[in-house]
Image (tube, rainbow over all chains, first blue to last red; front, side, top):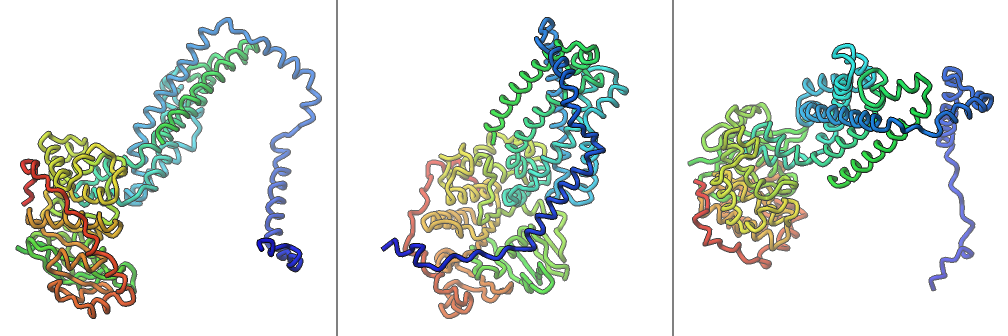
Length: 270
Length: 281
């Protein structure tokens, strides 16, 4: 008798009335999105026709990249290695600083007159792009990788401190209370109650930032802060497109390899 | 000796609801006191106040533990951290750090006793580690010392929490619904362990319980709370069914449903480990 729920025995289904308010809302949203795109057309100097008109030139231009010229591959690889080393040091210094700053940004650990100013400081570290910091540090400490390390350090500290503090704010407060009840001091509450809970997330965030710092470090050389970006910039400015292609291939391979390794590691800890 | 001395303690979380109303009570050394009452009657709140984890209202209430003020007039006393070192707190949710090993969790009990820098770097001496292992042996879970706390069952975690208070050398144990999230067999083991610590080490125990049967079985004295007020304080034998009916209202029938008939074996006596056992007085 399962078939008793056959559709024929029921009255024709009644559709719920259309929710006018809702459909109006979504219409307005789409209108806003398209309006915004249209408004930005001129400012962004959108000229899709140029792609077609200049297609001949573009083919010539692209042709210059092939075949890639790997004559100097040894120097590219060693410059790429320097780029990675810049990212390693920039990230490492940032992690060390982000631990105290991250905790001082957390509203469940410190009072508002501590976390508010520290958060604003971290905001400012994060607001300025690494490239801008790199230009400033090139002036301060001279051309070379060290300026790149300093730039990554400051910017990454701003990013990681925020991510670290978000992890701290999501902890389970009960183990911390358990530690406090034994007569432990505030620092010990953080060391034994907070850090064991957030460590896997912190490691994962740090590795992720290392990946993106390697990508950032490849362009830091353009402003003179060392690494493969310097080589890349020289070739592009001199119209050596075959060599440029070779450098780009080296960057793509190394960044992809590091991403894969780092992703595996991140899966391991969480 | 007076272990806990509370006078005129009030606590309001919001303006119109009083969580504690003029609580005054005294507990003497060596007592094992049950704290009963329906959910929301103020048992946990009272225990957290005694441990100095919550502050009372600023209207003159005072709590002294071992003669030292832990809070007065809504302010945690300066020496509270020192007093806390003598108080072991056991929570319903165990409050262990789940990613650390059981042994490390138990060693945390020493944080209030060893120099700060040593505690902060988790540097404990061999004799301190032995003390922690001895405590684990006493509660019968020394075989799990190197496991992570989260890999233990609820009852085992709760006994690890008791081992932490033993290692701490606590002279007062405050247990906040220690068996509320455990099955009956584990509940018995945990209550037996608390009972032994009370009798053998002369540790004063205040334990809040949801089931009245456990209070009758384990505690000579019972304090009953309703709506933040102490409504009964006397021998557990005087708890009449009529009074309990009134205390718990409509929930009273389920209170007696489980308890005495599912008694588990008492915790195995680690007699061979007696030499490691910690004198807590």
